[in-house]
Length: 336
Image (tube, rainbow, N blue to C red; front, side, top):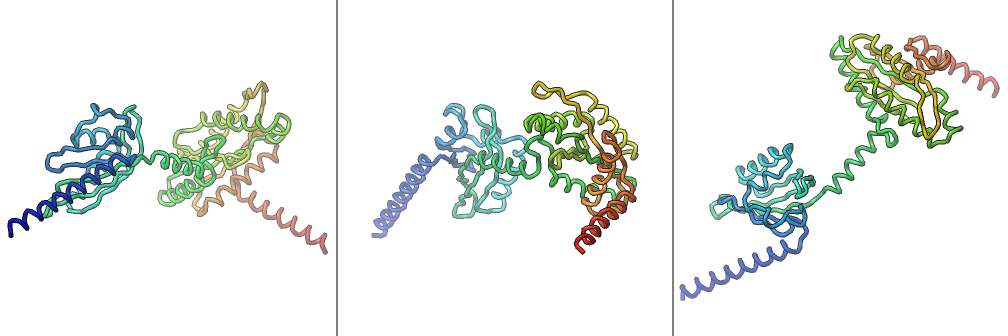
């Protein structure tokens, strides 16, 4: 009787195992994901057809060994992925997941999320790892586009105000830690831009902004940050300069670069720029204050005839405050 019971139990176990394997095979065939089953003892890896359809490999190209999989992980991700997998196995944990780039049959890379479950024997030894790879390239591209839109100007491709203010804050903090660290910002406004925009149209105006950006980029170092704040206003952050005269040299070089006309849609367009320069000092704590002072200096350059640069002086700020107070007093006087 005991033998009969033992045989019955074994048959029930075998039937359950077959049912489980059939269920797994059905799921593996039905899903669009790349399902894999890694034998940790032999390093043989079984893969479903999703690996072929998802990544564009033929059956002949796929090798049933873990080394094939590792070979196609992006070089910048490979060490992290392999270390993460073995860390989970060595710690006796049950689950592993990671996002990385996997090489396709056409030599391009897809972003994937890979999740796996570690199977242990009755003694707790890891013997298998079963997982699935899902292509998340579309999601990654959407995330990257959102990130780009948040920090870069759509028209010129330059960094925008948000990114600039963050970098300027970091630069101010760096200057506080190192007293010999010098930097400056140049606030630029295109002279007569409204006249060009109104007379030749917004399309030509946009082309001018793009061409203006490309020409000025040639005047700068790779470490400098060139930003479009909006409209026809631009800012340059000059980091780690040797002396404050570097800022005036850059401003003068920009003036020289703009001496040549722009050819835009069959129109020859001449333009200049007014530049305000604010130099780094220990009195600045907020990036907004530094940007404000460069803006004030730029308007002083415009008031003095345009196509020139002016360096900010605290007197300029005082005069601006006085002018604002006079305007407010006049409005109250009229009301009274």
